[in-house]
Length: 302
Ligand SMILES: Cc1ncc(COP(=O)(O)O)c(C=O)c1O
Image (cartoon, rainbow, N blue to C red; front, side, top):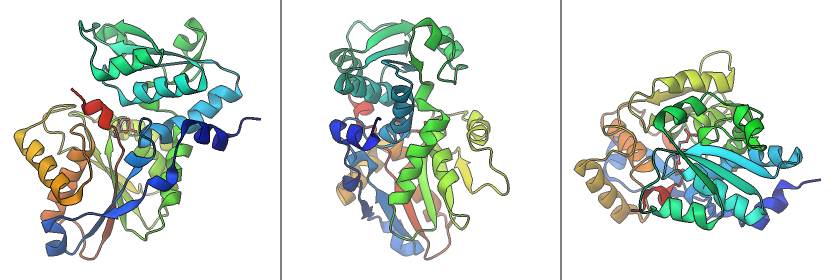
């Protein structure tokens, strides 16, 4: 019988490290908001943040069915593929990653790691990549073709929701709202599914035109009644992986005040958006908000 706790210990996952810290920022005291950050980025030096949360029960599912080959897809800086390749390397499993676009002449740090950890890389056209997105189930076409276990882009599947739920269970501090960055919306869905009715989760889309998010989150949730979640689409800074001088200055200022590392793709945009909404009086005085740091610092290496 496979024991997920043994696997976590083998990989070196440390949930105790994912502490909750108070955030310092001038707008907080002025607006009467208590902001904390859950440091899921400290869960593991490589499989940080929501990457492990989403992979945990997906991996257990694959191993329980006896699979030894995990197949997935992502961009050339994908945090998801990075975590998957590391897990494969540590647990002696074969991994294959379909990468969007042409193979670069010089590997970036993510691709270098994927190769180092033995992931079989297949560079495919953007069109072929878009086509792969339709496969969501573990036994979908690529699983059959490559004789393995298929994991949808960003680990967007129902198994992922159980691992994400553990983030909420670890929070001992009383709070009103949880916030986090969204890509596929899977992490938000796992949180929304677990939250008591009195609490809400607010996602910040890292993508421009992330309109598909609401549909995908609803599909994952099959929830009835009033949704306890919303997604804000106003702080993508021009689109996925796009940045501005304003965002760069914000990161520098935030890091100097808090000693918490941020990457530009997800967490900095979420925190910028959240603090901007607080500044504009969009939350009730005395509310406690916990922002979830979803890790991903590796994806911001040059
Ligand atoms: C660091 C980081 N934060 C947030 C997200 C968004 O998570 P999700 O795709 O579950 O919405 C991702 C992508 O998985 C990510 O790599």
